[in-house]
Image (cartoon, rainbow, N blue to C red; front, side):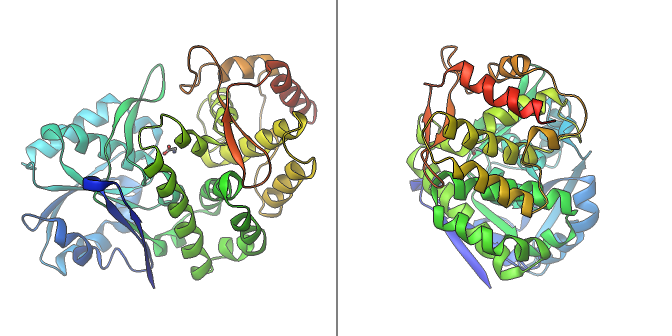
Length: 370
Ligand code: GLY
């Protein structure tokens, strides 16, 4: 069963293909894009060990050759040194303007490879083959590409849409449970931001999905991609509505900075905690029902996920210091923090009108509960 979500962006329109066995069928999926039967693949060493051979066979089945470069795994790769290495390697491989670069990996590889494709010979096409749940439902879709700067995450980059996304749900079977659940934080985000019925569905089907139910996984990836595609089509370069996708992210970015972008808090875990805090803040501001934050936390807890500040191991800075870290978020406009808050489950909106004292209250109580 392969499902398709179309992203209707005019001349930059593309399909997201979702289902099992897509690596094995990669050649047939990618062939229509190729001017000659050859692709250059960027990956990381861990993903390459698990999936590169499967991709090679899938491409070879249609007579497509590949050359591949596996970068070191981890967020540290998403910076100038490995980026220059990747771009120069693509040039050494004589990748031409009409060729296609393939990104095989999670968010780090997808963001770096997409940015490399954006600048190589002033732009070549690329195909995302996301291998983490987080990449399948978020980072591989929508065309945000880039690398980190010493000044902050994702500060160097370009909007460059992929020409195709192949989300093979079979590869999710080899993900460690913690990584899978971190990606699930982004899935929950979609229900919370814009589709209450999807959140209801996740409350019922989340445990089966985490246990490996294939149909449930395909449905969740599909619905997440549909929602992301709708928002990206409305606001490709984040002038407005696209910021809805950052539900939970203002808190998350501060918590990631406070934990040193380390193993203490994976990005998707920070998103889940951030969503719970955003709903708590919304309830305290009288925007949504008091029951809503409890319902968000109950679902995350039932999935065995982090949902409170007390679930983050180790010391955290004070509420004031966390608020200061939020002020360094790149979504700050004219020095004003923009938050995504909610009028209920599935009803998020973007606002700059959030009293700092209310944010401090949520953080202080969260820290006191530790
Ligand atoms: N991950 C948020 C966005 O793509 O806009």
